Picture 1 (cartoon, rainbow, N blue to C red):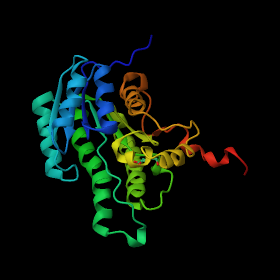
Picture 2 (cartoon, rainbow, N blue to C red):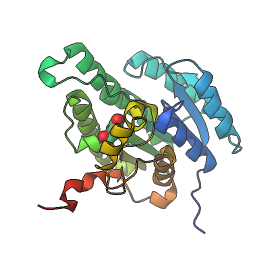
Picture 3 (cartoon, rainbow, N blue to C red):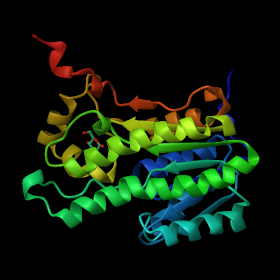
Picture 4 (cartoon, helix red, strand yellow):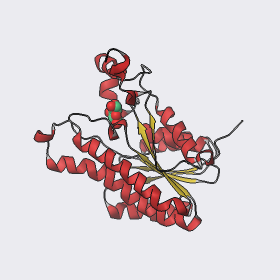
Length: 262
Ligand code: BGC
């Protein structure tokens, strides 16, 4: 058996209280990591995730991160990490928003900018704090959650697609900068996964059928399928992987319309 072993690794997950972040917190805990769950809204769901993660035996703590796009909040988060965990070995930049659907010409510039702030600038703030700590130990992994929409254009979501494509290139560039320091940087691109962000689509039978038609595997993914992939990528089993995007999407990137005709 080849185990995914993260014992002794200290993992910080932004948005770890819900959706993909919650699944990731549980998967990393299951692999033995100590877990810090950063949440924005009330602590209740973060506490629920923490209780589930604690069942695997490692240290688990929750912390409020009011705004990932606010540099002072991010600095305070990492200072807390130093005090509480004495550093960080794994950063999962998971917190993100997709914004309100609006065609570009009709979109509100402030709302557009907010998506870029949360989805791109926030991960940048977190990554620079993480690198400053990881380089001292000569090891670390940064996972940036992008989306299949770093590749696939999505009408009405130009801020989101732009931010995710930007985050992808940020990951590659950072990976190049820090590879020699023992730090790996990987983007993970989920497809359609059952989380609150798209619940209005997959909970509606017509929306679900439309979504399934875009996925060669004919099903929406489960949050654990992202958590498990991230646990592997953070582990030493993936020690030679850096600077790429790993898609976990049931084949969504495979131009499913081309299953027929052409
Ligand atoms: C979005 C989801 C969407 C999926 C596939 C994700 O990035 O957050 O709402 O279902 O991409 O289109």
